[in-house]
Image (cartoon, one colour):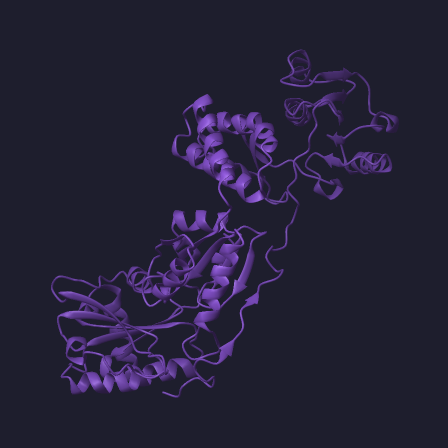
Length: 498
C-alpha cells in the first residue's frame, strides 16, 4: 500500500479557528422587553386574541383596534394576564401606530396586510401580520414558558405544527421547577454583580448555580443555596485566579456520542485546543466566544510538536483560562494524554480527564458486533502500528498479537499494515481470520473494508484509491465472525471472488 505523500512529523504551527462558527439563520431569535410599552393589535377575531394575550403576559399595554371584537377578546380585556388590554371599537388608522413598540394585524386580505405593513414601517414600528409571512418583520414562534426562563421555537413559518410538536417535546423534558431557579437567578443577579468579581469568577458562580438547578430542579432554591454559592465565590476571590486544563474525549466522530460531562466542559471552556480527528460538529458544542485552536497531530501528515501543545496548555492556564484539550476518541488511549498530564502537573496546573467513547467502541456499536464474544474472544487488546519514526514499533509482541483467542484493535495502521500482516503470519496467525479496516468511524463518510486478514492490506489500498479517507482503525479476530461484522466480511469475500 502506497504511503501518503506527506512526510511524517512535518512541523506544523498551532492555528486559531476564526469565523465560520454560525450556520445561516432563517430568522434572528430575539426577546423583546415589552413591560409598560404600547403595542397595537389590529383585529378582534380569535387569531388576534392569542397575540394580544401573549403580549399582555409580557407586560405590554395592548391597544386592540376592532369594530366588532369577538367574545374571547372582550373576556381577555376584562381579565388580562399582565399588562392592560384596551379595546378601541373601530378599525385601525395609521396614527394609531405612533409610539408603538410592535404592531400586529389580523388582516382580512393581502391588500389590508400591505396597507398595515406600510403604515407600521413608516412609523418605524416592527410589524407582524398573522399568517402572512411576506408582510412580517418578525414572527411569533412556539413558546415553552418557565418564565423568566423562556424558550422560543421558529420554523420560519414553514411548519408551525412541527414547531408545536417540538415545543411539546421540550415541555415534557424541561422541569417546571426551572421557573423557580430562573427567578432566583434574576433575584440574585444584582448581588453577584455587586461583588465585583472577574468575568471568570462570575461565570464560575453561575456554573455552580446551574449544577445545583440541574441536580434538583423541582426543589425551591432558598437562602441556604444563595449563601453557599456566595461563600464559595468569596473564597475564590480571596485566592489568586488560576486556570485549569481538562482533557476531553470527543469520541470517534459522531457528535451524538459526546458525553454530557464533555458537553459541559466544552460549554465552560475559554480555550479549546483540538485535534484534526475532532469532527467540526463536535466543536459546535463549545462556547461561541471560546478561543479555538487547531493543534492537529496526524499519523503521517503535518503535525504540531507535542512540546508546543504542552506549552500552549500551560500558558493559557497560567493566564487564568479554562482550557479544554479536545481529543478524538478517548484521551487515555493512544492520545498522548500522559505527556500532557505530566506537563500540567510540572507547572502546577490542575488537570482532569473526561473520558470519551473510543473508536473501537464506536465501530463495534455501528456494526452491532461484540468485540468480546465469549465463544471467540478471551482478550481485547489495543496496539499502535506507528512508532515515533513512523514505522512499525520494534517491540511489539507478535505472539500475543497472533493469539486466536483475542480481538485486536490496531491504531494508526495505514503505512505499516502490510508489514504488520506479514509479521503476524510469521507468528503463526491464520490468514483467514476475519478483519476490518474502518475509515472515519461513526461519521457520515465512514467506509468499512472487510476481508480475511491476509488480504486486508490490498483491500485497504484499493479503498484508499477509491476515495476512503480519514482516521483508519483495523480490527481482527474471530469475534468479528458474528453479527453485522460477519455480514460485511461475507459481502467483501463474495465481491472479491466475483
